[in-house]
Image (cartoon, rainbow, N blue to C red; front, top):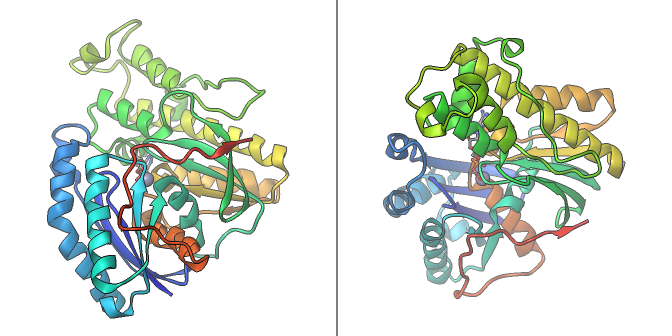
Length: 345
Ligand code: KG4
Ligand code: ZN
């Protein structure tokens, strides 16, 4: 079954074709970074207008690269939650148009669940169940226990900022370009994390939640002076080299992510861990998680970097699970800014 995946939840216009939920035939991502960079973050109205311009060629290019035509497509999967509603609408309208025009089944997909399902495109094969998944993106930092590919229970989440959001905010303080995660990672290459230690904060040992807002504020005060306001910090010079601040912050975030995830793995007794979401493209996180899990005999399943950040291949995989189960949505499929709330427990 060839599934066309479509994603426009934020600032990436993407289309992909995946065969049988496992084999990525083509994945095209049109980045809008240049359009948003000068604003230091995503401007929703600009994002949705760019999606409108990009989708015709992005979908055509995905078909061209896969060597298929629309006649070879068996179903259309589209992200309809969570995300910027006007951006989601553009992808959903494109998906509906193709599904209606070609008489194909249409399924809506949750973007966060799609980040979990990206693991089925990992080079050494997808996860086995049960497993734990850590999804770290710009909007979410969540731990799930998965009994199967489609049964997930939320066991931990951030109480304030997502890890990617914290990377983006600290990058802005340091006047590093948007998006902040890759900029911090690059700046940290020349830095010494020990020269700028950042306190690790956690909401306690009796739960599996995260808190990154305090770490971001610790960077602010330590780098620019106690009680400085963020808007004043943006005009001031930091008191330590930017490379050291970036390295210290990155190390602290990675330490907290690895430590809490290992507790989740130990508590649930699983032998496999899925890592996904934009922050999972971070090399230090990938290496440290792998090393820590290896010592405990736990396999880490992580997609290639390009499939950790937003893409439509993961949407096609996620949609395939629904289509293969005979499910589909009507042309009244709606968009929602929030994710489906996974059961907590
Ligand atoms: O999953 P994603 O592409 O979009 C959302 O669903 O949010 O994640 C984007 C987030 C941004 O906050 C970005 O700064 C972060 O992922 N990110 C990274 C890296 N690449 C992207 N964070 C740390 N290191 C990276 N290499
Ligand atoms: Zn995402």
